[in-house]
Every structure is written in structure tokens, then in C-alpha cells.
Image 1 (tube, helix red, strand yellow):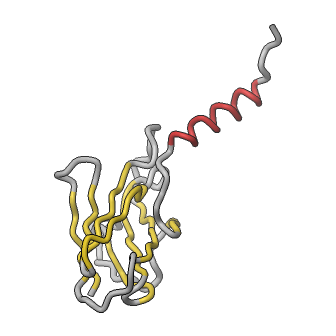
Image 2 (tube, rainbow, N blue to C red):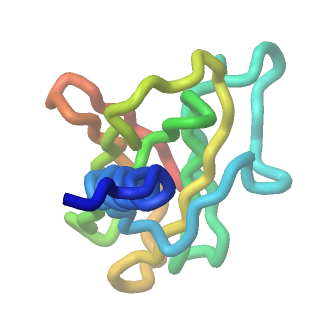
Image 3 (cartoon, rainbow, N blue to C red):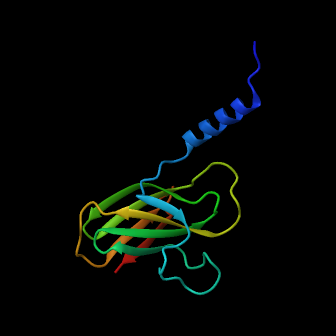
Length: 137
């Protein structure tokens, strides 16, 4: 039997691990916060998640804080009312993550435009006791 070259083994392992990563439902995700988004003073990450309108009544962004190598991944979104959205977040990886606190921003589009204010955005974690409510004014 012919041995498998090390490069091929590495490519196969990376491909298999990438297939296990949760799929994001965000329109876009990127490191950092939305330019101009409100942030409190102090150590980054102390302010917790932030939600801001991108296109008022139609699209918004949520900035979360966590490991820069394993940021939370939004795996589900449900607009339960014209003034309420639930976003399910999952851990990005099952591998070892860096122990830093960095912002990651996820952009979303509402199922339908709304004039209701405030819009409550509930971030739901893997267990039911991991919920955070944010408000889009």
C-alpha cells in the first residue's frame, strides 16, 4: 500500500474540520466593531454585545465579544414579531481558542421592514439560560 503524503493528509484534516464548523446565517461577519457604534469606556469586552441599525428598519449589526480565534457564530435567526428577533449563537470551534476578548460583528437583514421601536434582539446561546436582550432604538 502506498503511504499518503503528509501534505495530502493535512489538506484532508483541514477539510474535515472545516466541515464541522457551524454555518453562519449572518449576511456578513467580520472582526471588529461597526464604525461609530456605541462603546463604553474601559476594557474591551466589558460592555457586552451591542446592536445598531445599518439601514434603519431593514438591516442591523450585532457586535459580540469573545475569543478572536473562535468568535460566536450566528446559526439561526427568527423574526418572531415586527419588534422582536431571536439570534442563536454557537461556539465557532471545538478546538482550543485564544484567551483574548475581541469584537466580532455580524450583519443581518430583517424578514420584513419595520417601523416599530424599539426592536428587541435576543441573543440565545447553546443553553436556554444564556440569553442577552439588546434594543434597536
